[in-house]
Length: 84
View 1 (spheres, rainbow, N blue to C red):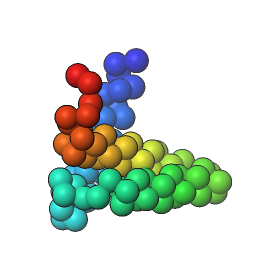
View 2 (view 1 turned 90 degrees about the vertical axis):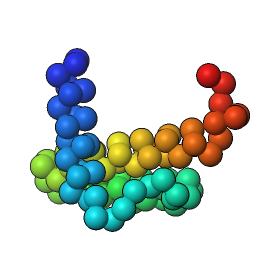
View 3 (view 1 turned 90 degrees about the horizontal axis):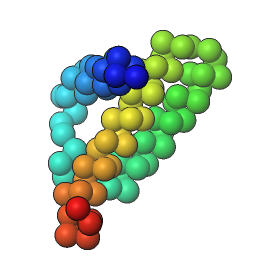
């Protein structure tokens, strides 16, 4: 299991590096990030539908990255409402 997590987190990291010119997500609206995650999920579904497995893996990382961004923004914006 650890190797799977390591491999996938590396894929996520590679996607973040590839897109770093777009800037960070520190000030992004949570709703906007969720919309982007939905768009990436749609791209993942399309890649699977056409059996483009390499693209599907990339899109999995994109979906996961947006989920991570959403979680991070929720923690930053609503830290007082989150039970630690």
